[in-house]
Length: 347
Figure (tube, rainbow, N blue to C red):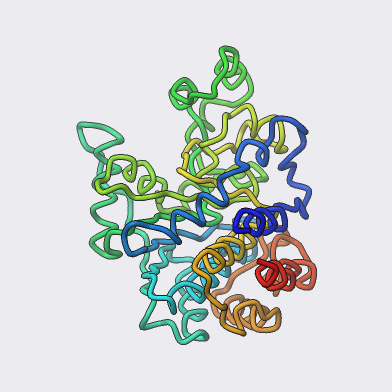
């Protein structure tokens, strides 16, 4: 029954409500290549051999807002995971950039989780070392864990990561012989290894280099499990997919595709939906009755209002400080929250 419930949750959150192109190619797309990742992510937390400790990295800079600000997709979902799992004794730490700190702090206060869930600002980039990027990543990891502690799971939730470079394409096991030449012909050199919005805007200088944590996690012992949650191809975790798959399915995908992989990749119609689904899946596997307010649409609306007003946060599509996510009216956006309790009850 667990598989049935987890698959139903996955199918619910993977509706391409914004028309992102998650499954433009009916055979090889972002959904077909990650079919088992959602269930694996839920199980990695619920049946972790160690007491789970989650570090959730979120925050996406929206440069076309007036003034520029963090977006509503990501922080709201991170808060949901904290609300769902912290009361169960799972340690949850939220990490973000300065532009999202006030919104997340306001959300934690509204949920009375300020003392229970640490909120930290991501470190600045470390100075380059002679041994190159790996040394940079390990130095960044050290700075991060000194503030956040060492997690068992590192989660990127709607968190942009750097795009491909020729070396990352050549190293990817899914790269085909002509992929590199196609990449070089389509993507200007100055756009290699940069963080892009889905509109193709370069926001690298506005983001702390959280991707270094995921690079470093590969060599950490005991192992740190990494989970990426995204909806557009440009987020940390999407590097698990071959570049050509993001290029073929997502508009502007060849330019914006993130090169940084995760152990499990949760692709969803809205990234916050991925957080809702992950929390629900873990609760199901732990056979825990959720708090009555957890899936309350009105409670979620109020939390979003608080975070928008006190952050501020903006809708990533419209660029406006409003109670909406990814250009969706709140009622449509909140539909998974209404449906998840029935799926869980059926299990």
